[in-house]
Amino acid sequence: MATLPNTLALIGNTPLVFLKGPSDAAGAEIYGKCEFANPGASIKDRAALGIVEDAEARGQIAAGGTFVEGTAGNTGIGLALVANAKGYKTIIVMPETQSREKMDTLRALGAELVLVPAAPYSNPAHFVHTSRRIAEETPNAVWANQFDNIANRKAHITGTAEEIWAQMDGRIDGFTCAAGTGGTIAGVGMGLKAKDETVCIALSDPYGAALYNYYAHGELKAEGSSVAEGIGQGRITANLEGAPIDTQFRISDADGMGWVTRLLAEEGLCLGLSSGINVAGAVLLARHLGPGSRVATILCDTGFRYLSTLYNRGWLEAKGLAVPPWLASA
Image (cartoon, rainbow, N blue to C red; front, side, top):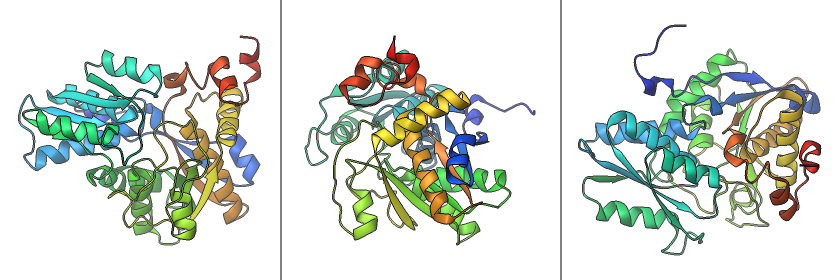
Protein backbone atom coordinates (compact mmCIF):
# COMPACT_ATOMS: atom_id res chain seq x y z
CA MET A 1 0.00 0.00 0.00
CA ALA A 2 1.31 3.45 -0.91
CA THR A 3 2.02 5.94 1.85
CA LEU A 4 -0.38 8.82 2.39
CA PRO A 5 0.72 12.46 2.23
CA ASN A 6 -0.90 13.52 5.51
CA THR A 7 -3.26 12.32 8.21
CA LEU A 8 -6.33 13.90 6.62
CA ALA A 9 -5.84 11.55 3.66
CA LEU A 10 -6.91 8.77 6.05
CA ILE A 11 -10.48 10.02 5.68
CA GLY A 12 -12.46 8.11 3.07
CA ASN A 13 -11.52 5.18 0.83
CA THR A 14 -13.12 2.88 3.40
CA PRO A 15 -13.63 -0.84 2.69
CA LEU A 16 -16.90 -2.26 1.35
CA VAL A 17 -17.68 -5.62 2.95
CA PHE A 18 -20.09 -8.41 1.99
CA LEU A 19 -22.61 -9.02 4.80
CA LYS A 20 -23.51 -12.71 4.88
CA GLY A 21 -26.43 -12.70 7.33
CA PRO A 22 -28.34 -9.85 5.71
CA SER A 23 -27.61 -11.26 2.24
CA ASP A 24 -28.96 -14.68 3.21
CA ALA A 25 -32.06 -13.04 4.73
CA ALA A 26 -32.74 -11.10 1.55
CA GLY A 27 -31.72 -13.67 -1.05
CA ALA A 28 -29.46 -11.01 -2.50
CA GLU A 29 -26.02 -9.45 -2.11
CA ILE A 30 -25.79 -6.79 0.58
CA TYR A 31 -22.62 -4.80 1.17
CA GLY A 32 -21.74 -2.42 4.00
CA LYS A 33 -19.45 0.60 3.62
CA CYS A 34 -17.17 0.47 6.67
CA GLU A 35 -17.26 4.11 7.75
CA PHE A 36 -16.13 3.15 11.25
CA ALA A 37 -12.69 2.79 9.59
CA ASN A 38 -12.33 6.57 9.34
CA PRO A 39 -9.97 8.25 11.86
CA GLY A 40 -12.92 9.54 13.89
CA ALA A 41 -14.65 6.14 13.60
CA SER A 42 -17.68 7.45 11.71
CA ILE A 43 -18.91 8.62 8.32
CA LYS A 44 -19.09 12.17 9.65
CA ASP A 45 -15.35 12.61 9.13
CA ARG A 46 -16.13 13.05 5.43
CA ALA A 47 -18.58 15.89 6.00
CA ALA A 48 -16.24 17.52 8.53
CA LEU A 49 -13.33 17.58 6.07
CA GLY A 50 -15.55 18.83 3.26
CA ILE A 51 -16.98 21.65 5.39
CA VAL A 52 -13.58 22.78 6.68
CA GLU A 53 -11.93 22.76 3.26
CA ASP A 54 -14.91 24.57 1.72
CA ALA A 55 -14.63 27.30 4.38
CA GLU A 56 -10.93 27.61 3.64
CA ALA A 57 -11.52 27.83 -0.11
CA ARG A 58 -14.08 30.60 0.46
CA GLY A 59 -11.73 32.53 2.74
CA GLN A 60 -14.17 32.28 5.65
CA ILE A 61 -11.61 31.17 8.26
CA ALA A 62 -8.25 32.63 9.24
CA ALA A 63 -5.31 30.91 10.92
CA GLY A 64 -6.09 29.90 14.48
CA GLY A 65 -9.83 30.30 13.94
CA THR A 66 -12.66 28.26 15.43
CA PHE A 67 -15.26 25.95 13.97
CA VAL A 68 -18.55 25.82 15.86
CA GLU A 69 -21.14 23.12 15.32
CA GLY A 70 -24.31 21.65 16.78
CA THR A 71 -24.17 17.87 16.52
CA ALA A 72 -25.29 14.58 18.00
CA GLY A 73 -21.59 13.89 18.44
CA ASN A 74 -19.96 12.25 15.45
CA THR A 75 -19.69 15.37 13.29
CA GLY A 76 -18.16 17.14 16.27
CA ILE A 77 -15.59 14.38 16.65
CA GLY A 78 -14.73 14.59 12.96
CA LEU A 79 -14.50 18.38 13.11
CA ALA A 80 -12.24 18.25 16.16
CA LEU A 81 -9.82 15.89 14.42
CA VAL A 82 -9.78 17.85 11.16
CA ALA A 83 -9.44 21.16 13.03
CA ASN A 84 -6.54 19.81 15.11
CA ALA A 85 -4.74 18.73 11.94
CA LYS A 86 -5.24 22.18 10.40
CA GLY A 87 -4.52 24.34 13.44
CA TYR A 88 -8.08 25.40 14.28
CA LYS A 89 -10.14 25.18 17.47
CA THR A 90 -13.61 23.68 17.89
CA ILE A 91 -16.67 24.45 19.98
CA ILE A 92 -19.24 21.67 19.89
CA VAL A 93 -22.84 22.05 21.08
CA MET A 94 -24.55 18.74 21.78
CA PRO A 95 -27.84 17.60 23.36
CA GLU A 96 -27.20 16.23 26.83
CA THR A 97 -29.14 13.08 25.87
CA GLN A 98 -26.33 11.73 23.69
CA SER A 99 -24.02 8.92 24.80
CA ARG A 100 -21.41 9.55 27.49
CA GLU A 101 -18.77 8.07 25.19
CA LYS A 102 -19.27 10.85 22.63
CA MET A 103 -18.99 13.54 25.29
CA ASP A 104 -15.82 12.03 26.72
CA THR A 105 -14.32 11.64 23.26
CA LEU A 106 -14.95 15.27 22.32
CA ARG A 107 -13.34 16.50 25.53
CA ALA A 108 -10.38 14.17 25.00
CA LEU A 109 -9.88 15.59 21.49
CA GLY A 110 -9.61 19.11 22.88
CA ALA A 111 -12.98 20.43 21.77
CA GLU A 112 -14.89 22.84 23.98
CA LEU A 113 -18.13 20.99 24.70
CA VAL A 114 -21.38 22.81 25.39
CA LEU A 115 -24.26 20.58 26.52
CA VAL A 116 -27.86 21.76 26.16
CA PRO A 117 -31.22 20.15 26.99
CA ALA A 118 -32.88 18.28 24.14
CA ALA A 119 -35.41 20.53 22.43
CA PRO A 120 -37.45 20.59 19.20
CA TYR A 121 -35.97 22.45 16.23
CA SER A 122 -38.64 25.14 16.63
CA ASN A 123 -37.21 26.01 20.06
CA PRO A 124 -34.51 28.75 20.04
CA ALA A 125 -32.61 26.63 22.60
CA HIS A 126 -32.21 23.76 20.11
CA PHE A 127 -28.58 22.71 19.80
CA VAL A 128 -28.34 23.87 16.17
CA HIS A 129 -29.60 27.39 16.95
CA THR A 130 -27.38 27.57 20.02
CA SER A 131 -24.32 26.70 17.97
CA ARG A 132 -25.16 29.38 15.40
CA ARG A 133 -25.41 32.04 18.11
CA ILE A 134 -22.09 30.99 19.64
CA ALA A 135 -20.43 31.18 16.21
CA GLU A 136 -21.82 34.68 15.68
CA GLU A 137 -20.46 35.78 19.06
CA THR A 138 -16.99 34.21 18.65
CA PRO A 139 -14.24 36.15 16.80
CA ASN A 140 -12.76 34.43 13.73
CA ALA A 141 -15.30 31.61 13.93
CA VAL A 142 -17.23 29.67 11.31
CA TRP A 143 -20.54 27.95 11.92
CA ALA A 144 -20.15 24.56 10.24
CA ASN A 145 -23.93 24.29 9.72
CA GLN A 146 -23.79 20.64 8.66
CA PHE A 147 -27.55 20.40 8.09
CA ASP A 148 -27.76 23.17 5.49
CA ASN A 149 -24.17 23.44 4.27
CA ILE A 150 -24.10 21.51 1.00
CA ALA A 151 -20.35 21.03 1.27
CA ASN A 152 -21.60 18.09 3.34
CA ARG A 153 -23.38 16.29 0.51
CA LYS A 154 -20.69 17.28 -2.01
CA ALA A 155 -18.23 15.21 0.03
CA HIS A 156 -20.45 12.18 -0.63
CA ILE A 157 -21.02 12.96 -4.30
CA THR A 158 -17.29 13.16 -5.01
CA GLY A 159 -16.14 10.66 -2.40
CA THR A 160 -18.53 8.04 -1.01
CA ALA A 161 -20.56 7.52 -4.20
CA GLU A 162 -17.47 7.26 -6.39
CA GLU A 163 -15.93 4.72 -4.02
CA ILE A 164 -19.06 2.54 -3.88
CA TRP A 165 -19.39 2.59 -7.67
CA ALA A 166 -15.76 1.53 -8.14
CA GLN A 167 -15.85 -1.07 -5.36
CA MET A 168 -18.94 -2.71 -6.88
CA ASP A 169 -17.52 -2.53 -10.41
CA GLY A 170 -20.52 -0.45 -11.45
CA ARG A 171 -22.86 -3.36 -10.69
CA ILE A 172 -25.20 -1.93 -8.08
CA ASP A 173 -28.98 -2.10 -8.07
CA GLY A 174 -29.78 -0.16 -4.92
CA PHE A 175 -28.47 1.98 -2.10
CA THR A 176 -30.11 2.86 1.20
CA CYS A 177 -29.35 4.65 4.44
CA ALA A 178 -31.04 6.79 7.05
CA ALA A 179 -30.96 10.59 7.04
CA GLY A 180 -29.72 12.91 9.75
CA THR A 181 -28.48 15.96 7.91
CA GLY A 182 -29.39 14.23 4.65
CA GLY A 183 -25.90 14.70 3.28
CA THR A 184 -25.11 11.01 2.89
CA ILE A 185 -28.27 9.78 1.22
CA ALA A 186 -28.56 12.85 -1.02
CA GLY A 187 -24.89 12.89 -1.95
CA VAL A 188 -24.51 9.17 -2.54
CA GLY A 189 -27.85 9.11 -4.35
CA MET A 190 -26.86 11.96 -6.65
CA GLY A 191 -23.45 10.45 -7.29
CA LEU A 192 -24.78 7.00 -8.13
CA LYS A 193 -27.65 8.34 -10.25
CA ALA A 194 -25.08 10.27 -12.30
CA LYS A 195 -23.47 6.92 -13.11
CA ASP A 196 -26.68 4.94 -13.63
CA GLU A 197 -30.13 6.48 -13.35
CA THR A 198 -31.68 3.05 -12.65
CA VAL A 199 -29.93 2.60 -9.28
CA CYS A 200 -32.74 2.61 -6.71
CA ILE A 201 -32.16 5.03 -3.81
CA ALA A 202 -34.19 4.22 -0.69
CA LEU A 203 -34.57 6.07 2.59
CA SER A 204 -34.43 3.94 5.75
CA ASP A 205 -36.15 6.16 8.30
CA PRO A 206 -36.39 5.51 12.04
CA TYR A 207 -39.62 6.06 13.91
CA GLY A 208 -39.85 9.56 15.33
CA ALA A 209 -38.62 11.09 12.08
CA ALA A 210 -40.85 12.79 9.52
CA LEU A 211 -39.16 11.92 6.23
CA TYR A 212 -40.85 8.56 5.64
CA ASN A 213 -44.25 10.25 5.43
CA TYR A 214 -42.79 13.09 3.38
CA TYR A 215 -41.45 10.83 0.63
CA ALA A 216 -44.39 8.41 0.84
CA HIS A 217 -47.24 10.92 1.14
CA GLY A 218 -45.82 14.43 0.69
CA GLU A 219 -46.34 15.41 4.32
CA LEU A 220 -43.71 15.99 7.01
CA LYS A 221 -45.27 13.93 9.78
CA ALA A 222 -43.51 12.07 12.57
CA GLU A 223 -44.87 8.95 14.27
CA GLY A 224 -43.46 7.04 17.20
CA SER A 225 -39.95 7.49 18.58
CA SER A 226 -36.43 6.10 18.35
CA VAL A 227 -33.35 5.97 20.56
CA ALA A 228 -31.02 6.08 17.56
CA GLU A 229 -28.50 8.92 17.73
CA GLY A 230 -27.57 11.14 14.80
CA ILE A 231 -30.38 10.10 12.44
CA GLY A 232 -33.98 11.14 11.99
CA GLN A 233 -35.10 14.47 10.58
CA GLY A 234 -38.22 16.61 10.79
CA ARG A 235 -37.54 19.05 7.95
CA ILE A 236 -36.10 19.21 4.45
CA THR A 237 -32.57 20.47 4.99
CA ALA A 238 -30.58 22.12 2.21
CA ASN A 239 -28.65 18.87 1.88
CA LEU A 240 -31.91 16.97 1.28
CA GLU A 241 -33.24 19.36 -1.35
CA GLY A 242 -33.41 17.48 -4.64
CA ALA A 243 -32.36 14.18 -3.09
CA PRO A 244 -33.27 11.41 -5.58
CA ILE A 245 -35.30 9.22 -3.22
CA ASP A 246 -37.10 6.45 -5.15
CA THR A 247 -38.69 4.61 -2.24
CA GLN A 248 -38.72 4.58 1.54
CA PHE A 249 -38.89 2.22 4.50
CA ARG A 250 -39.69 2.84 8.14
CA ILE A 251 -37.47 0.86 10.50
CA SER A 252 -38.12 0.17 14.17
CA ASP A 253 -35.43 0.24 16.85
CA ALA A 254 -36.18 -3.42 17.54
CA ASP A 255 -35.45 -4.40 13.93
CA GLY A 256 -32.33 -2.26 13.86
CA MET A 257 -31.08 -3.72 17.14
CA GLY A 258 -31.79 -7.19 15.82
CA TRP A 259 -29.21 -6.62 13.10
CA VAL A 260 -26.78 -4.92 15.49
CA THR A 261 -26.91 -8.05 17.63
CA ARG A 262 -26.64 -10.48 14.71
CA LEU A 263 -23.78 -8.66 13.01
CA LEU A 264 -21.78 -8.75 16.23
CA ALA A 265 -22.61 -12.36 17.12
CA GLU A 266 -22.29 -13.81 13.62
CA GLU A 267 -19.87 -11.55 11.73
CA GLY A 268 -17.76 -9.83 14.37
CA LEU A 269 -18.90 -6.27 13.61
CA CYS A 270 -19.58 -3.98 16.57
CA LEU A 271 -21.81 -1.18 15.28
CA GLY A 272 -24.20 1.54 16.38
CA LEU A 273 -27.98 1.51 15.97
CA SER A 274 -27.94 3.72 12.87
CA SER A 275 -25.96 0.96 11.14
CA GLY A 276 -28.51 -1.63 12.24
CA ILE A 277 -31.34 0.49 10.86
CA ASN A 278 -29.45 0.87 7.58
CA VAL A 279 -28.90 -2.88 7.30
CA ALA A 280 -32.56 -3.59 8.07
CA GLY A 281 -33.44 -1.16 5.29
CA ALA A 282 -30.98 -2.82 2.93
CA VAL A 283 -32.67 -6.18 3.48
CA LEU A 284 -36.06 -4.65 2.67
CA LEU A 285 -34.67 -2.90 -0.39
CA ALA A 286 -33.02 -6.06 -1.69
CA ARG A 287 -36.28 -7.98 -1.26
CA HIS A 288 -38.08 -5.17 -3.09
CA LEU A 289 -35.59 -5.33 -5.97
CA GLY A 290 -35.70 -9.11 -6.17
CA PRO A 291 -33.46 -12.18 -5.82
CA GLY A 292 -29.83 -11.67 -6.75
CA SER A 293 -29.95 -7.88 -6.52
CA ARG A 294 -26.87 -6.02 -5.29
CA VAL A 295 -27.44 -3.41 -2.57
CA ALA A 296 -25.05 -1.19 -0.62
CA THR A 297 -25.56 0.60 2.67
CA ILE A 298 -23.59 2.52 5.27
CA LEU A 299 -22.09 1.10 8.45
CA CYS A 300 -22.03 4.52 10.08
CA ASP A 301 -19.93 4.22 13.22
CA THR A 302 -18.43 1.91 15.82
CA GLY A 303 -20.48 0.34 18.58
CA PHE A 304 -17.70 1.20 21.02
CA ARG A 305 -19.25 4.68 21.05
CA TYR A 306 -22.38 3.24 22.73
CA LEU A 307 -21.07 0.94 25.46
CA SER A 308 -23.15 2.74 28.09
CA THR A 309 -26.33 2.47 26.01
CA LEU A 310 -26.75 -0.12 23.25
CA TYR A 311 -24.35 -2.54 24.91
CA ASN A 312 -25.59 -2.03 28.46
CA ARG A 313 -28.17 -4.47 29.84
CA GLY A 314 -29.87 -1.99 32.17
CA TRP A 315 -30.22 0.64 29.47
CA LEU A 316 -31.64 -1.86 26.97
CA GLU A 317 -34.16 -3.14 29.50
CA ALA A 318 -35.22 0.40 30.39
CA LYS A 319 -35.86 1.11 26.70
CA GLY A 320 -37.78 -2.12 26.18
CA LEU A 321 -35.19 -3.51 23.75
CA ALA A 322 -34.01 -7.12 23.62
CA VAL A 323 -30.88 -7.90 25.59
CA PRO A 324 -28.29 -10.05 23.72
CA PRO A 325 -27.78 -13.43 25.40
CA TRP A 326 -24.18 -12.62 26.36
CA LEU A 327 -25.32 -9.51 28.24
CA ALA A 328 -28.27 -11.16 29.95
CA SER A 329 -26.11 -12.47 32.81
CA ALA A 330 -23.77 -9.49 32.93
